[in-house]
Image 1 (cartoon, rainbow over the protein chains, first blue to last red):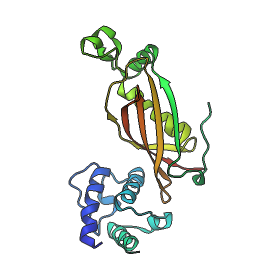
Image 2: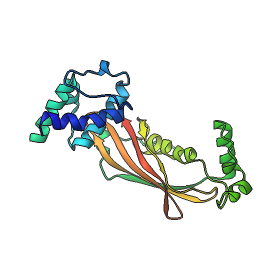
Image 3: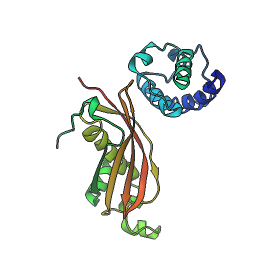
Length: 81
Length: 140
């Protein structure tokens, strides 16, 4: 699964979780860039991403992600593995 | 009645709970007073029948109140909290009808300790409400 495919699938997940159709995830996006991205919506985002990509994250992996690009690399690694 | 106390290791996909309940006129009146929704469809049997229903229609939000019981008392239980729900209302429930709730864990997220359940509320054997409920388990 390449980056563009992941970003294409990320967008509707982000838009649904944050209830904002204008959100387009990009590599440098961080939580502070999205008004609705708080601790609870972060949980909902992880849950939705695990379902959308059929992957499971660990607490360490989630804690180590600081921007969307990190998330994309992690998904890519899991799908490749 | 005490809330279930679950450890994260107790939770797994496929676990489920189910129970039955009935909403009576007194509960409908209390719900109207709590919410300010006095729509006659819910409180006036004659009005409801004039609109083609067999009797007063149970508030959809009152039915969804059972999801609070699901999250707070069963899964995740005492150490959990609600983070989201969806609800599709498929057919009306009439006051006095027995409603059967079944909820099953369909996803667990180790990273966030979040739990997603799929539920149905059935009346007369048919689905009246269905959707998902999400909670988080945070033990002390």
